[in-house]
Amino acid sequence: MRTTAHPVGSRLLGLGTYRPRRVVGNEELAAAVGHDDAWIRRRTGIVTRRYADEDETISAMATHAAADALAGAGVRPGSVDAVLVASMSDLRQSPPAAPEVAYLAGARSAAALDIDAACAGFAYGVGLADALVRAGSARYVLVVGVDRMHDIVSPEGSSAALFGDGAGAAVVGPGEHGDIGPTVWGSDGGQRHLIGHEASWLDYRDRSGQPWPTMLMSGMEVFRWAIDLVPEIGRRAIDAAGLSPCDIDAFVPHQANLRITELAAARLDLKPGTAVARDVVDVGNTSAASIPLALAALRERGQIPAGGRALLVGFGAGLAYAAQVVRTP
Image (cartoon, rainbow, N blue to C red; front, top):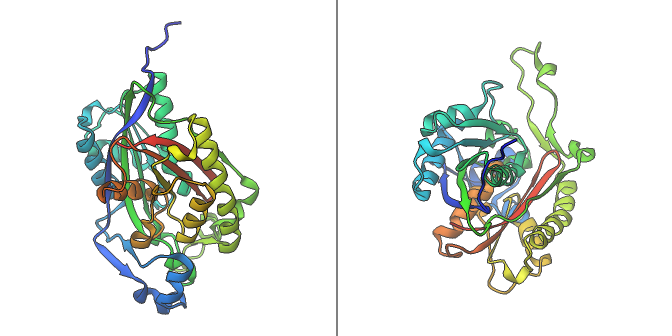
């Protein structure tokens, strides 16, 4: 059987983002969530987040970020072989978002599929794109993380203060030196109850006029799980790439909570001056969009140069997690 010739490795070629127009400060949410600005900042580090308007749909935000990434990579949309869209908040059950995003972005004959790995979705997507390129099944893969979290979280209660909306994308293509390290990933379905919807849609089928089920989170249990998990899989991803913590130029975990980010960074023993993504302060927890948004923000601020090594760590509902070291475009 003939095998497909394939490159030595893969790399990130371009990044793209979309941040919704509407900025929501803590004061606007205080009455509904039952906590003031000082409490929200102290417990989460979040000052503002973005809420998408009606026209800023999952597909629209994803397409904007995709176009941005393709332009940055210098890749024609028609050259894209596969489109992977990571999201946990698309309220349309079918069709999947990825084929529509591929069409709108101009990749009209590309393979397209959705990934539902919640807040780990983008890191999962990078791992899958790396495998596709290495295997020769695709030359260029567009990976998009996009979520409208305010659609699926109750507007009341402390969880409402955490989440925001947005989209981030990356183009993955061939690279001579293998600039995407091995993906370290896994899940713990035994703790799936810690983050998830309060009921299934079937439970609401005959409840006309009732509020739909929203996503709930056991905050303290998730916090304890994350501060142990993130440093562990971060170290495993660094080891898998044949590197040490002193080789890492930027730490870009899922932007769940600033306290998790700070504790995980301290436990990783990174070198002094390593850039740490703190995008959660300005845009909140955007689930699958958070890693590409945070990585792009570091680039925009000049905190990591082109070709710098960034440790990406995704984690969230499922419980699912994934990590890899990548060179920035």
